[in-house]
Length: 371
Ligand SMILES: *Cc1c(COP(=O)(O)O)cnc(C)c1O
Image 1 (cartoon, helix red, strand yellow):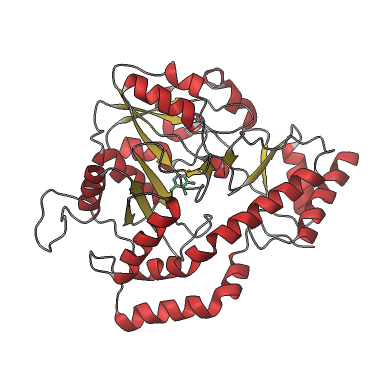
Image 2: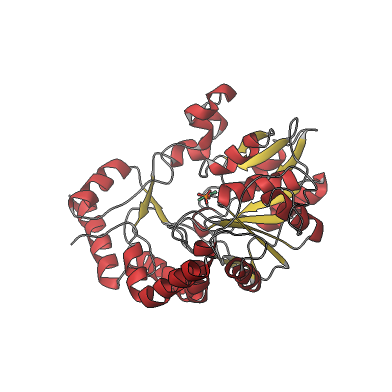
């Protein structure tokens, strides 16, 4: 049996007519650019705001832009330090550097893969201005403790929600705990466009206004009135129209991901692999299903021979990438992730995965450990 890591084709087959119609409408109306008046983009902003339970949604070009624009909107720049997790996609720390500030890495919380609040406090200096927790793999970060630290030290909090659309803590959706949240709609994300797209969410009116202005060349609303120098970061009409078709299905897809995770938990409970942990009261939306084993590389090759695609998110933690060699970090600085990066393996996970496919994966894992 051949099992892909992610199969975006199955979702397209399911929604083909509506998606094709949405694309045709945008082309017919020539509503290509996400200008301030684009109806598809405005509709998406409104529906995503209700989905998250937030006052303001500002659509933009991609998730990296969302992080950068929020960093700038919150007044963070040269001379400032921003604490980020040692494990994430590079966009999280890159956004900080691109805005002229300095990323400061903190190790992850054992078992959960998200930033460890106990490691945050020891990184705070007089220059620290913000924390960017990442709800990695779909698991909400420990926001209760992070917000306590932020309030105590008067730090801004930008949530990186790129992998966690619809994740919750005690019924409240991620993106609404800190000052603002950044989402990505990269095709493979839990809610994916057919190209690059992203958005920012916030309950703060001023942050929203500044962010919108930056994303639209410094124009707060009226054409040709530029209050500041901004940049070009628009969500285009085609992407918004596609997201408008998909958003009503997101809850069902998320429930399917959670169901698949529980099937994996069930079928792997006797297995020597370490399963992801979920904090009480947290809704983990399983963008990725990540297991750990000391035999990671051998297991990965075995599964590959069986036709099962897996991935490693990520093979190197951020502080150990060449891009951060200038910081001179060693494994001893981040003991948890230094060990985990050799053990983590992401199993196939997408809403359209079948029970039969999941049991083929777990049976194959069982065979490997009996070899
Ligand atoms: C995907 C991702 C981003 C960046 O989103 P893009 O839309 O690809 O720019 C940022 N942070 C994390 C954790 C991501 O997974």
